[in-house]
Length: 202
Image (cartoon, rainbow, N blue to C red; front, side, top):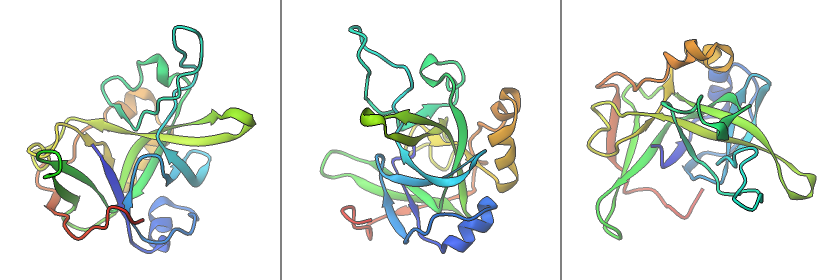
């Protein structure tokens, strides 16, 4: 949807892919929501928290709602008031994980491109004004219906951009980026059991 990401290749390759210097991260086999990810926005490349507290969301008593949104649906991302004023970002990853099966008997699946190229996950981005005056960059990945590769594992998948679509996603019009919010072509992904991942590790 994605559930978790992984990014293990050298950062110099990530920098070349994104078109600028990136933070020096160690290989990460298990990136979960709530953790920092590398994100490129129209203002540059930096870390951002994966999980967005929508700007201006309040409950019936007028108090801020601090529930985070990890994924935003492509069908409504530009319509919901919770996303008013957000900008766009891309998050690089080698792939992502999903799970199927019953509780405590789930199978973890590793999903990546068959050609092993980097993925650019489409995302939205903003800055959350945290208590105490701290500002937190935050993102939510954008999802769409799955392609045939993923359909048996999950009913959603991330919007994954080609490298030459990154600039359009970051700076294009709503009409231009709406055309990009499609699943990858069928047959482009490799899916395998991820039984070698330490889910407690980085």
